[in-house]
Length: 430
Image (cartoon, rainbow, N blue to C red; front, side, top):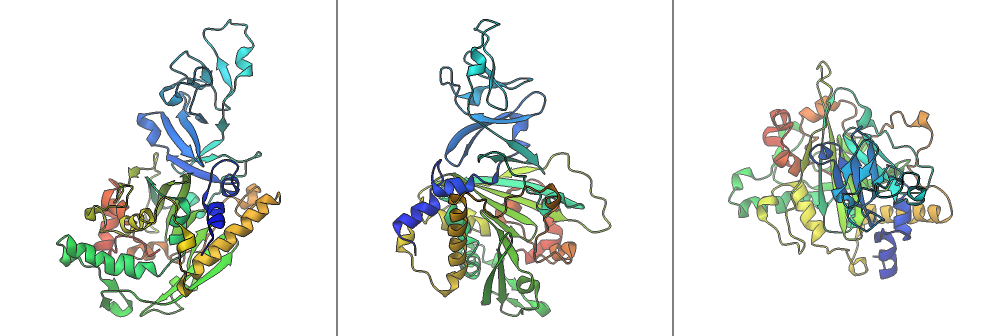
């Protein structure tokens, strides 16, 4: 357990807080690029700061403060122009550096515009995701994790804002045992309540054996250069299987990798988290995969309200169940009241890593996973269970999509369904 002071230190993310300063050393996804197609100006809140993301008429991105420094009107209603975003109130225009470059009511030779600047941060687009960096300059390189540079894949993006602190979401990723209970027995109880017992979850084991539950016989966690590798042996399998021999990574500070799926837990503020799912779907080696000019985006509905009261219709999948568990811990989980057991050793390891990296930043150093050498950032290859045969891994249904993606995404559904069939567990075994 953590005392109250330690809990505050690891959960608060606003400007000037220890965790906020650590998180500002990283690029964070803030939107899908296609979200700006219908409305080129989007409100963004990140690490406690309220901002607007926009695309100007030349297609360039900008991320600036959400309030005009003139008369304090919201720039959410700003008008994108060739060189920046123009405030609707009096026409002041700001470029992507936050510099005011035009004041229509001032004299043409006025030097006043040069003296007015608002908050601005770097943004970059990669594989249909828009990332922002709020930390000290010079900004590090935006990591090119393997899934962003793979050939022969299709991709999509989903997101939702979850009303709870980012840490209780990340700690779920270091807790393998919840899978057999929350996503096994509880999942079947949900189906029973919904009058759908015929869809009861069945777990497939080697040799074609089928069971109603998955039991963990062994779990393990190893630190590696990018974070923590999670390993598991479940009933009917062994340490020779990829789930133990290779495992899957948690990338420091806030990314879970499951199969060919990234889950980003982006701190919006102390009590809200932008959850982003980025998935790459390996295709058959002989397939000619067309280039996706735009990466499809879907919005994920929440299964509960902010009090944690659930709509049971949304609890028949892994992600709905996870979100319910996260929200019902409260806006910020009180870890001074928790009681951790032996099965929580992954959570304990992750908290230790957070403390170590916080100490690095406070000592003036850089934390792990900050990349500055372009030669080391062409493709950052990661261990994952299906790396030896990505297409075969997907065919066997071991890379199951997050439940809400399969349920709500308007794209790729048929492609996924053809090889998942009744083996689908409505989500990855994370």
